[in-house]
Length: 256
Image (cartoon, rainbow, N blue to C red; front, top):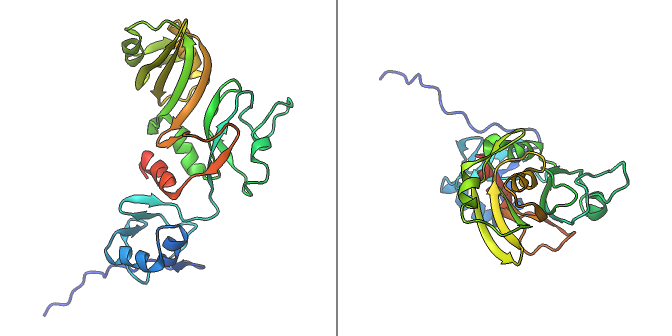
């Protein structure tokens, strides 16, 4: 019999300070350890691109873990927070001009130092994501990942029937063209209208500049969603931690 010269598949690397995979999964809220063992046994868990097996150990700080194809964040040092930013608050943790800032609303409720994902100008309000996961934050903000931002805007009306087609086709601004991914009229309020628009642009004041250009200046602007994360009924000035499912959805939105 000819010897088999093929190299055996390497076992999962064991890191210093690593923990059993089922323990890491359970700590991340996937389920009980027994349930997590069953997921591993059924080959529904991968670690760093490799199908996991019972007995594997991982380092939660570095391992890239997927369950049923969805990225799972297991590093407990990383935090993901949604905030409903009030109007009049600047998107910074420390403002040298003495204006209302994010730190006033976060206080000591988050021990880690977090950064905002994208910006909302002081006159705008709504959903803001805060995290210390720099890699994910960069991807969410970078236009190449095309993560949609959805806004509810009160604008000067009335809205002509062809406005949607014009915005979807693209409008030329001083720093280049911009087009929306979706647009609809939500309500008409006398000489004003409420519209919803989504776009993956991140340029400064992009919604206000766009609506100014087409002759319907914004009088109030609320961001209602960033990718799969929605503002929902989160009250003005409040924050909440994202759920594991929401964090997984953000990773999915950027292709991780």
